[in-house]
Image (tube, rainbow, N blue to C red):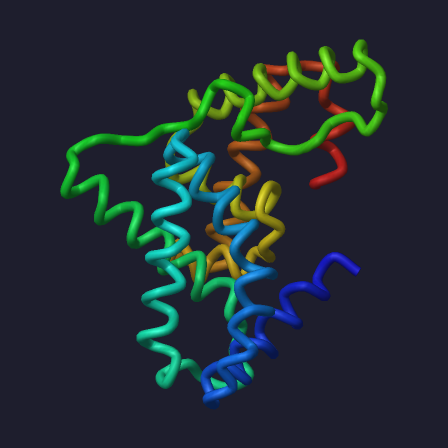
Length: 194
């Protein structure tokens, strides 16, 4: 059940917001890897991504009393992380772009452990990252939140401040660009998303 982690994270946040400090560990374990992956793709710098994850959790801690019980914590956490990233770009005047070193994998394409499969997967991931670099920031962000981070259209919409239909349109435009750029080599992998 792919969505179970979201429910568990939201339940942990509910407990944490009500003063159960022990729930923070569960919340962190569920959200930190996903936030780290999201931020690493955006910054291309593992240390900076980790700093932003820590800042995100610090802001969540400071605002925990204002968290609405029963609300989904995932879009809230991703929105905080995204705002911190944007604020950092504004202060530093640089666009982190995407990591092109293979560290910011779009998604695992092959689960075969052989060296040929690993090399083929790395080539495809590199091509996908290159193709995503040519997609508009708005379309790329929607695609990554849905396809890479596993957020629903509604959750991604909350993070981006747009409607779920706008997320779907933006993500589909990115998908269409990827499919056109990559051809039949990864078409089957992308088709599973739509």
